[in-house]
Image (cartoon, rainbow, N blue to C red; front, side, top):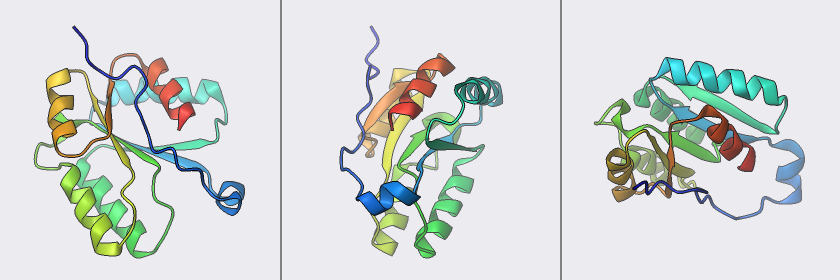
Length: 147
């Protein structure tokens, strides 16, 4: 029985008109499965401009480092972070939360992104908002388009 969310929930706050004019939406994907990422990038390129930028990080530490740099510079944070929990078990949501608290910014929605529910459950326990099964890149593209 699968328990992954059919439609992962993300924050429903609407940006101001000014933010909408100038800022594109952003999704970060933290995953070390290059084969899956390559397939996802092919599907995204076939979609054309969907109004959302997707950025990939091979390692969780890279994402956390960039997150800290953007927070320090008061730059545009990602709207959503898709996080593969098994990527690096010592990199968990609380590190993103620690950076957000340090700079007084809102933590982006973190979505557990895994092939196995047990790993998604672990990330949900430490603060992920929902889970998305890493199986079909087309479903991930649909999720990214919905952000």
